[in-house]
Amino acid sequence: MPSNKVVLPAPTKMEYPMLRGCYVMLHVGPGLSLSSEGVSGPPSVVAGSDRFLLNDDFWIERLDGQLAVRIQESCDPPNYGINADQVDRHLYAFLRRVPDVEESQYEGMDELHAVVALSRLVHPTSVGDRYCAWVLHYGSSRSAIKAVQYRGISPDAFISNSERDWLSLDDAETLRQLMPWASKKKSMLERVHRAYWNHEYAMRSYCLDRRWPIVVSGLEALINAGRDDSGGQFRGRVRQLADVFKIQLSDDELARAWKLRSKLVHAEGFLHSFVTILPKSEHTKLYEKLENVLRSAVRRCLIDAAFSDCFRDDASVKARWPI
Image (cartoon, rainbow, N blue to C red; front, side, top):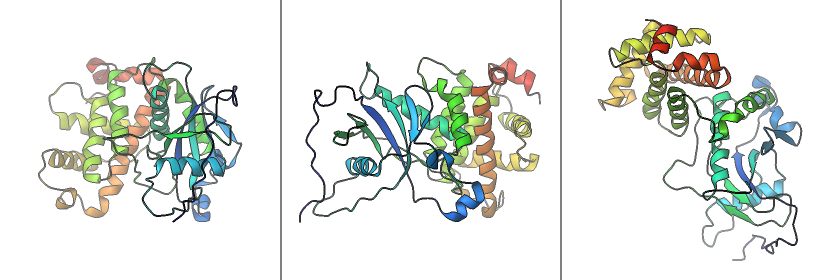
């Protein structure tokens, strides 16, 4: 059976002396329905200008359809004896110029991952590691493309609410404010750093049974000040955090959230087993509130240094969030 893949001649340095290599992460999705646009507005960062610059080296762009298909072909399994009719399924892509000097393989791609993780603090999307590539001569229609594949991690990210699985123009503007944190040279406060990565770990976990304790741990990273009465600290301080961001969380909901976290951490059962603590119909709703508090708090910490200082150490936490 003949292959439908196009074999391109390998470019040489002499052919493209001015074209730089780029790392690319595709955001692949089913497309944008009219009903979705009616709820949340048009995805301006996709449909607007050709390129949204985050800084001199990073940007968001809707790629040429041919390039997007070639990247997907590079990253998808080749199968055997089967023709896969590839179509352009990407919404947009995150791009980063390959640094002139990299101390380790794909070091620049690591920073691109950090940008995508930061973007989920603004608005969670499902863009993951399944379609990561190195375009050797970005801008050339004949550039070679190398898939950047990862082992031992989830290649996908999951969002609990799929109403809008893309960044708006306003979201991209906020992400631009967060860009300094993509650099390895800029360090977050330790508590904020732990909370930040717990948020990303939750996005990489499919089962709500796993996401629940991870998000609670992310909140604990911010608000725990000592080991005494961890449940009381969680209930008292997360409610105060929720009030700051106008997220409606009652004392009863927080008590149930903590009790479920403890049951799950100690493997006393699965989430659906604890209907006497919280009805199954309420699981996702309460989880999304907890996730939203964590996301909002970490995002504010990275934008507002004074707010971040409220989590500098135990004394700072106790002073700003008394219980």
